[in-house]
Length: 302
Ligand code: FE
Ligand code: FE
Ligand code: ZN
Image (cartoon, rainbow, N blue to C red):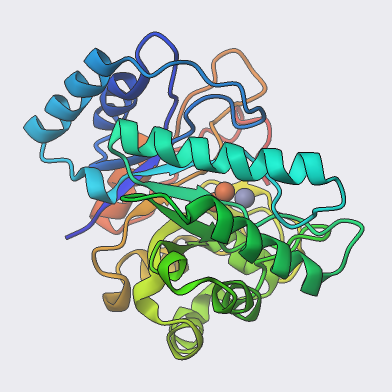
């Protein structure tokens, strides 16, 4: 079965209920959202009535809550501990975010491993593992999905070996609560040719184990292979191409893994901006590219 959805907005007045409504309008059967702004750690209270209404709506529409994910805000950085106060704040915030996942009953949290900045990769890896060991120690019933990154700046988690190095340092109880989220744009930008996804999955399986992949972000990329940039493009409008992405989505070895679109809104700098997800999900289901973007109107295409 195909689990396909997109990034959605979690707004104060509708919360999870709004997320489910939005997903249904795209023809999605799963979703991803941030529990507030992706740039800040400000969070508002979870309304239990809206949460319960959301789960009811999901059930009515055959949506599987266990295939849906939350994304942690970008600013959490576990890789650098030079400012101890900040490092501890991020660990604590991660713990709170995991508890929010439990409260919302959407129990997978995608996390960017972090950037080592003034330190080095090895120290960054140690700090991330240490942070996860602390944050996840007492968490029951929620897990972290470390995202595969493009390698922008000093990002960690930009190769299978990086992710393996972090995972190898986890305490055995924490190891059971840590998984991986792939991202096709990030993989392309890190130097992985998406046309050779099976080669990548072979290596992943050998080093980490394919069962650790619990989500894939499906994005095209504006930049060439190995550019270390990280700019998502709409499916079929980037350097990866629609067919290569389709091969990831329908890959037998990724069967049952949630596929989440994080492609940019169309005309996003203009007033009449709109989400591409309904079109992209329909193309995926039909397995056929359809040039739905009016290039004259779209200001920031390739
Ligand atoms: Fe991400
Ligand atoms: Fe992503
Ligand atoms: Zn990205």
